[in-house]
Length: 236
Picture (cartoon, rainbow, N blue to C red):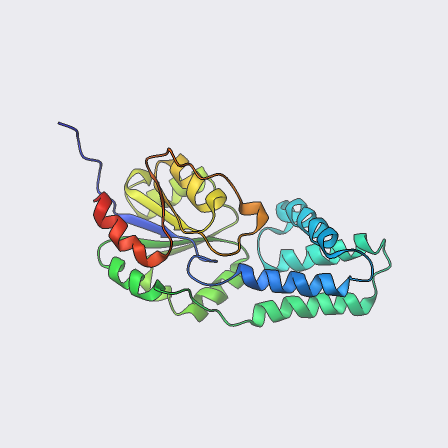
């Protein structure tokens, strides 16, 4: 007789582009930034330089709007060879403030799904980024009362999930992580010994791209969060 795997007790959820829209706001701001520097370089060149700056600056500024703003300023200085005007810098700062002020828009099926699961599982929000901004978005979303715990971390890796699923559940072997990023949400959770559920979002930052681990038995892919309850019934 084959022994049955321990039952799941804890489900972790990513926030940005899993529970609410996020990347589309960065894309719109990037388009605005490209237009600002349109007299100095082609749009694709500006985007490439911006991505390089963002990746380079993660170790200094982390993830989120503030780091994005600083990377835009750095890119503007580089692309214009130091000739960027004060008015363009002011426009970049204004664009960043507009991002912070933008209302939070939750994705479909979010509240209903979380309400269905909150009585049967420990739900943990695990998100990375700027503490102030992530707290703001969670408060505006109105979803905070559905989580047993909230963890805002500087980055996500296998050790992160091991630590958090030990703290808030019965370890990674009885936990699941749900998110839109293969690199941050799914692959490191599987490496930690958890289930990893991938729900793609229409836009994904290039830094978060990775290959799907199709042969991994603890990997699952859904079209939308509303399908999660059915998956949980199937895997027991």
